[in-house]
Image (cartoon, rainbow, N blue to C red):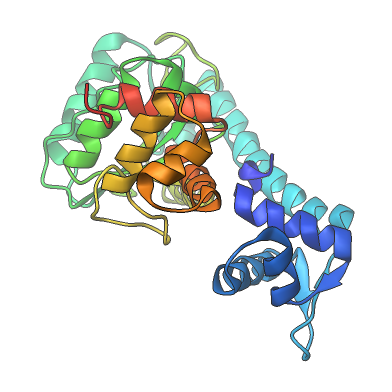
Length: 316
């Protein structure tokens, strides 16, 4: 429920427990939820950073009223998005009126040929970093295979993109090539940023075709604003990793035990039987499933099983 605010399911469980108690120690919460004390301490420290909880000198954590704590987070997110949306509306107006002030900063691309030319130039010219938001419906080719020597690629997919059967294979191929991929519940717009110097985005947030067109933004102030939007969404999004390398923000990678667990899950085996097969406890199995759901950016076991099967994680 609170993924959009950068709060995962485990963070939310600890937060709800603190709301019930109003104040508690790490040990109190850990014992109540059946979590390791160290893991609980890490979660509570994150809640303090988010402004949802305070800590006194006696190591007692006191929850901030949710209308204040969560309300502040919501206002911050809304303000950031409104700032960008307001600026985009100004850009569209500049384009429509042909204001001379926009010359050199914003260029309108209104034909498929113009769009294809810019994408080709991006593929050949990116040298430092390519950032992108992908959300349905796709207008550009979702395959965006960039064949340059740029050292870093960071893509955020809207969770609804997983409904397209091609997306898991696409994400898997990108990950194998060293790209960093994350999943967000919702994205404000499609967008491609190249070397923090140029940004391509549609004129309308829910645009379903090339028309009315795309905006190529080069102005330093505008690009800086859009890069800041990307970074804000990136920090709140869920990292996605399919191998044992490149772990991000402490999120574990898929390992052999995960693959075995998912195979049993797909077979319909109960948690207790899965635990017996893996030589562990039922609670550990449930924790692993919750972790894998977070890693895949899914909300249910059914979605997780679908994602694992479509991504080729489960041997056929």
